[in-house]
Amino acid sequence: MPHDQSAAARAGDGPRGFDVVIVGGGSAGAVLAARLSEDPARRVLLLEAGSAPRTPAEVPDAALDGTTVAASVPGHALGWTYRASLLAPDAASGIHMPQREYDVVRGRLIGGSGAVNGGYFVRPRPADHAEWAAAGGDAWSEENALPLLRAMETDVDYGDTEIHGGSGPIPVRRAAEHPVSQAFEAACLAAGSPSDPDKNAPGGGGVGPVPQNVTDGVRRSPAMQYLLPALSRENLDVRGGVAVMRVIVRSGRAVGVEATVAGDRTVFTGEEVVLASGAIATPQLLQLSGIGPADDLRAHGIRCVADLPVGQALSDHASITLSVTPRTTLPAPDGSPFPTALHASALTGEPFELLVGARPLDEIVPGIGAPNALPVMVNLPATGRGSLTLQSDDPAAPPLIRYGYLADERDRGIARHAVRVAADLIRSREFAVVAESDDAPGARLLADDGALDTWVASGIGTTVHTCATAPMGTVADGAGRVLGIDGLRVADTSLLPAAPTRGPAASAVLVGETIARAMRTA
Image (tube, rainbow, N blue to C red):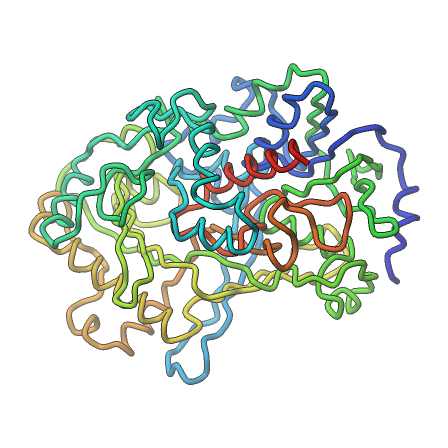
């Protein structure tokens, strides 16, 4: 039966009178709630499906510990675990793509995935801003984003400069030197890569330390740094354990959300509703609310209120993990387990990243990887597109997630080039000082494009950097306003028209800051 949204609105009688109801307290949602509630006249309600610690002392240890991503293990209490699959490559490829499924973990507490990630805090690049501005307007340009990027950070290394901030909520520091990073940098420099000491400055890439929001071993998530200090404000109400099921739309306007709280159905109403539940849950909520591809919605008995391509352009980075064995006992890294990265370009110009770990993979992600094996991650550009669709009109049923990795010859060519670069570097004389290669493909396989394609396909993984499931330009405008529906916005990485060139943690904070700026000036 089609959903009767007026009946849903009568299902409960929740609190009235909020100016803004924000659904989801992840990186962008936490930032948005903190910034909007700076205005004491604006009443802000933040609803989080997971737990909602109110002080740093209440944050679980697995979320505080920035030296591992233990909470990102499938089935962990601090994560939502989804299943995803891989779209088959084009039939002309001639490669064998095994049926692959992935466990995709998203944070299940205030802070979302930003509370359980690897502490990587690298800004979007000029090309990202150009693409976002083309889709969403000048607010997303590099020039207009820079003040927000500076305002979000306290750069521990560079301080307050023309490009860095010195008094923002999130402390950002570059990884300290480590034997693994020193050896990897030496190998990259010997191979002709430039030095890149500040990856948050404009530049063409190279090898250098990774900016991170981990200090004294503690992950300084956006929720911890923005939201927790704001909880004393009388106009900010943050509630955990609230599972939003759909947005209530009446006569083309969002008037609230239907949710369950401790098993009871209730309604929360507001002048505006903002979905900030992340690039998996936000598009699912839109579709459950009748906002999405009309034919897909009707197939599930959902009345379409806005025919929009929600979930049709999923963008994410594929990853291939190699491993190396240390030649001696190495010290633990001071902060994030990934201290150094090479940013380079394939022969066709697309960027890729080699991210080197300084802790064994089975310590970074317990239960994964061989003991004592250090990971070398080959992270590929988000060129292929996947999808996210409903499999049921039941809000408790997970969506169908499909990645579009290795979908065409361009993608496979980038992967071949990146793997060849990685294999050469980790077998180099400079890197061999600290470690030896375990599982990089051999010279014969590296020389055979078809065999290498099959090898890559057998081990392709995901970085869980999902974006573009409700993108600017086709689903929303540059202020996050959903097209055709008044009073409803999106404010998370769903909104980005493509995954950023590098990891999206800093970009997610920028989304929160940008939408907050748009709402304050509306």
